[in-house]
Image (tube, rainbow, N blue to C red):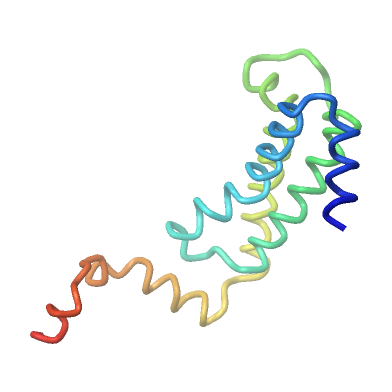
Length: 133
């Protein structure tokens, strides 16, 4: 299976750099917000994360093939959002926030967030230190 995928990719992309850019764009669109926001926002939920990943990937695939909707002229910010990767990352952020608000985090997610934000757990101790205590 991997051989067939490799052959298709090798034939479909004339330049390896184009394939590397595509891989980076997909990684950026799908996991940027799920990695950055949850440690700082207690309201981030698992369903919001997965909705962000899926909708971001679908949005990137569509805009990369069909183009970004809207006018082509505007200011700097508008021109940045005419690039499929930044447009899709914006859509992914909106879906992440709305998905987390519509489907709030459960008890396990809140407990994990409490562990992440507990300053007492920031200290790293060796096994000898733990035995002495």
